[in-house]
Length: 394
Image (cartoon, rainbow, N blue to C red; front, side, top):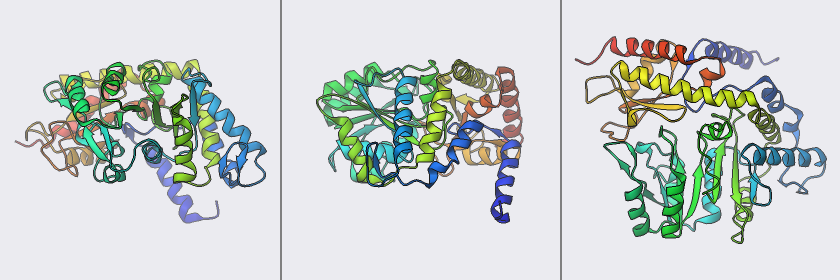
């Protein structure tokens, strides 16, 4: 690379990544094959539109590429082409969710989703997001004793508020979502059921987390977390008389974006082929094993783990512990100084600012990709404990 300034930054970031323990639950490491596709000549091509209906010529290879990616996406999740439609053009997760809402929820109507402090995502109707400005959020309730979704209360609220769409999924909820109950709740109020599986898509592909497809009308996902692909997103929509799939396609293009990033789609296709392998299933299984052992060791060391443990790849840990510990921000900063990378995070019983909350979020996908097993996460837990207890609030 002739640009020395940028080359130095790239090399510095390589060194940083190699020198840390990465516990960011939403990060992972792509394979060399995915990297190669992501930086390919497909990035030169403008492909506005959909396959066989582009607005530019020279699309014989991009059309084939997009079809392959869509077919692989359906195959990885065991879906039939006549029942489900896949859109692989969204540039990232937030625009993918926004496209679904634009397609299916009239402005000003209600979206039911997990609040941010309960583990939901900004795009599930938070007021600071465009999704909370254009639509009204009906919050999904959490039982503050168990710190689990309160499905009984969720149904009562849904019947009373009658949201047009219910979105279930999370960014910091460590347990399995009961999609069957969510379907029943959606049916009870006439809502569309959408699942945002961005965090657990790779676990679904690896058969270690329940599939939402039996119950959902729409499923969205990013491709760079547990799925271990490039940064990007996909949308699945049921094919039926409502023509949800066609509405969503129009919302993606021309509703929200122009030409898709074809090199990104190429990289997603490569990652999906990897996700269909036996080795990926072993990887997904190990991700969950590592997370469970990690959570249990932190509990043994005296830390409060939200909901008492995890069923997934992520752990939400209360570091504040009613003022007896350290704030989430301080915890994250201390850990970074010791080359352990995580993020501060709100917890269901939050009493502090979201900019310096009561907890941290920890994840196992990235370090599992690097080959770490249960014994390694026991040692990481002990290291975290030692760092955080060094200057505990008395």
